[in-house]
Length: 519
Image 1 (cartoon, rainbow, N blue to C red):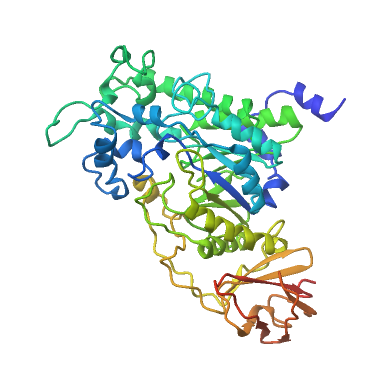
Image 2 (spheres, rainbow, N blue to C red):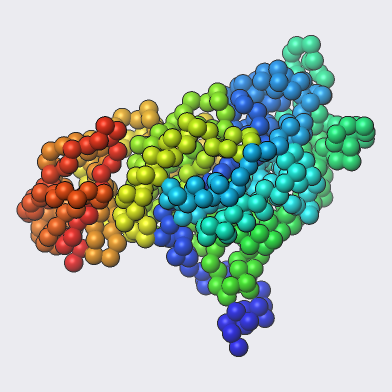
């Protein structure tokens, strides 16, 4: 009897049993770099920040200042939210230039080893052919099974495929849709969150119920209704991971979405993988902060401070999570590459968000950055894919002090995470690294040294001294990846001194392959 057949006949395991059996798959631990498209109906408005669907109903966004443009932009572009709400924004989103084959082919060419697409956001809109939720991308807006298209293209190009879910916040996140203006000519006129199915007669949304998108008004919510929302969440997400046979399920919240309901969906996901493939060759990721050994910790716009014992990943985006022209860019090729290096050196992957335009294309300014990142990754691939941390993650440390930036985040939830690594990213506003600061990765007998901000001349690395506390062996050769020029070096008890090669016009990190240091 084959192991696969045996698994198919085996009883369903509970979460604890699955956890004991689980090992992170090699495709994930060796990938080190993935691409995400955080893309949906909230990409359609040109301005207003990454929480547009919430902030378009708020004349005063309070501390959530990144959404200050949403309300005025919406009134100017679509009309007043008492008449034209987010449901109408969805209706205008057509994704008419989406080419999933072209995107996946390009992402693979720049070095991405896995790909993740947004399945739903806090706006409660599904980007897939959902059996259990009528507000989905097949019924409304694009008229396409977006997750299905991405899944097909990922399979075509041999890239593991993941989906991200952000939906479990929607009960509180959507509350502004049930309000009204506090000032102005429409003061006190209810927003469209209070519309009913009957109001849709003779409109484009006839037959749809706004309550299925926004939820019921707060005063009508019963315990039974809330429990039904959570059960529906499980149905939608079990269908999502099984229908599309995904390789990764990514959550935006802290812990299992809706507690035991989220654990139920995760359990179904891993059991489905066992029955299909005879092993759990999949990954779940979220902000669990080490509480679940079978889940890869996600770090939003930040990184770990030390080498982590388990695989993890950091997520970054250029501007806003959804493309918005009014948001200042936070990253360029240099900072993306620095983030990748630092994460890899600490046993992490970088999952980089590409903010697609509403029509499905990559913004040209962002593509120029991605081209540079891809060229650098392809040149230094040996030091990235399949790499592991060395004994320490870096040397000559001192240039990494960063001030947290909490924009476009759940401020209250993040405030409770006192030990969180989230939101400590290095951006273009951060000072450059010192010329001697380095990071390490290792693969087999090769040690790789990443010089973060190279300057031509001698560079001394104390941790690679002969007879030192890190046990570096007798170094026999040093090679600059991507170059055929010989690199001069000398090793002494005080450290390894190498002759850093002249830098290019655009200063990007250099990578040196060290032979002999790992015995």
